[in-house]
Length: 189
Image 1 (cartoon, rainbow, N blue to C red):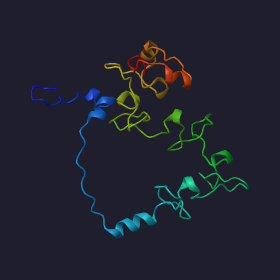
Image 2 (cartoon, rainbow, N blue to C red; image 1 turned 180 degrees about the vertical axis):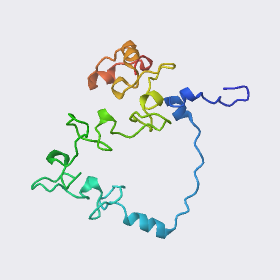
Image 3 (cartoon, helix red, strand yellow; image 1 turned 135 degrees about the vertical axis):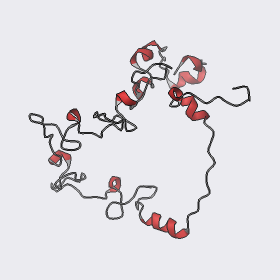
Image 4 (cartoon, rainbow, N blue to C red; image 1 turned 120 degrees about the horizontal axis):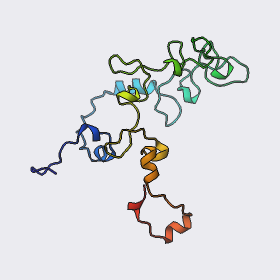
């Protein structure tokens, strides 16, 4: 809290932290001004499977629910990628670098040779990790510990390896033990 009674704006380093996201003020939503005709048009383009909100690709269905072209190999119902074949049956292209037999991702190159999406930072030729940037320019998750810029992963609860190893270990409880045992939640992740 600042002197005026409000909260101080967070630094740019902390804007991706969970408390900042959870405590952010809700923005006022604009009233929807869609006409019934617009709603009907959108509904016609949606997958026909109940509860699915994805757009149709073919036969009134999205790719997940059977829309789109299928592999030409008899008995294979996987979606076709290239030349009418799925990736299992040769529907992908190989990397164009001599001696590399990996599958190409983009521009005829595999991930190792720069075939992914390029970093948005000017002059950078590396492949993006997330949010349109490579690791060096802000892509990927960072450790939740302030001032730590090491990579973080879901399996380490968004901490880097070093800080994850310093966390107290969570004992494993059976469901019947949880009902009768008091657990101090501040000690655990």
